[in-house]
Image (cartoon, rainbow, N blue to C red):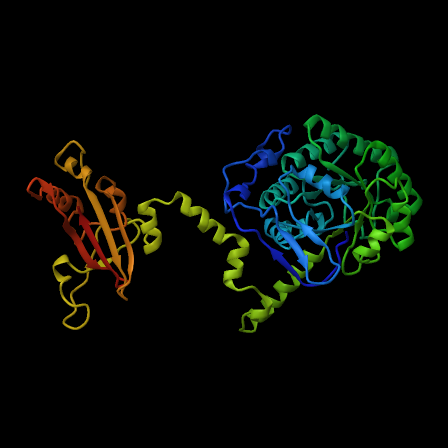
Length: 497
């Protein structure tokens, strides 16, 4: 089936269940090369779920229904895409957020663009200034942000055949599903810019053989995309010769950059018809004609990249926003998502959902009340004797600063009896609505006192010690320890039961 360009799309998300939740790999840069990063699974995590069964359903008739992501290792998932019918589009990302947006839009895979990475990470042109280490580091962030396969831009391998082997192994450890390797000399640059030069034929072929050896040594199945820039550097005939040689050497995908016409594109696709071909739709004025996916499929291409779309529109959007801000305005609502939409895209809601799994009573109270530790915040309260007075009317009582508890008790001393007691914390809002009513073992008071410290310099531990002695007919009875209003006007009551 074919992906049609343009149109409105709806992303359908399945209902979340524990069975479909997936965590990303551990920091894949640290994994040994023989272990696929996607094989390292942790316990299921809503925050790190990658929606493995999402579908992109076009509202236009006859458009592609696109399944997203699988549980397969990245290279295997990419090979399945290459073996499936139709042509497959892969926008080029440049950081973790742009990669997440690609996946969120329903694409089955994506590329990294050296042009865009150099621009976004360094603010510099793609002329060989970005290093192997920087590309691998950025790749780690990208592959861990998504579950779809990512094809990385390996430039010219950063040196000779031995450097190529190290580059391939580094990209494998970074979690890439595929790597693009080219035959430019160093320093390399964007293939659509002037002054391109390539290494001799033999060296170019040896780079691909070295990449295949590195893959075997790593026990990986990373997809090797062999690129030649000799079309602009030498001639079309030279580019076609090199592509045939790359196929004979064992490359998985063939790619000639900066082809200048449909006829040249067809000539590439006629080489090794069973081997997938890659098209590069460089937007905004590159040397290659911009064709839609149907046209590209008819010529014979299997995958197509869009290297500048995301970085280009990002630049334009930021320039528009800065112009608006400089003129005393903010960007118009139609030009940026709402704050809630931004939080959803980045993952705040997933974070909050997962955070609940690890919450404790004390941390839950802290979250609901917005408190931090007593060492950094102070609060105001009324004395316990003043609580019986109506909330409205009458004289206002002076506010008393709540001081942090600094006492310490030996559990073997007089305080030890309190460990069998229960501490009840109740919070009622200014509107009379109950915000919290929880019970915790009194032995956890040290944690709770960081949220509700001693009142007016009176150590809350002392109050608990006295409360532990209140006995009625051999049974402990409840006693109110604190009853006050905080600075927000909420009533906080603490009982020992």
